[in-house]
Length: 112
Image (cartoon, rainbow, N blue to C red; front, top):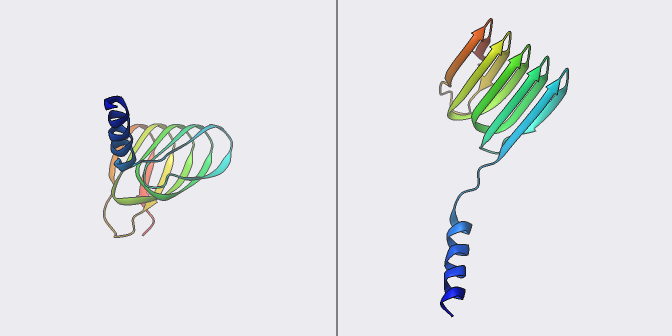
């Protein structure tokens, strides 16, 4: 009987925990849309054109020559690693994104 109660308790705890979505795209020369649904979006590759919706808390771009437009959550974060990537972001409340860039000729800007 205690095993059943333990299983029910674990199920209740798991059900009450928030689930954060994660969307990802990997490739070269592709065009796509992602919905991160309040979670993380990851883009890896080269020369991709990606539109990300869903108020992401974190956007990660790794590669070269990617063009990304992202809808960030308030105070969202952008991490770019690589070369010649371009990220244009917006937030619903006008807050600034936290930005980390590693590499050459990367550009991150607010679309205002």
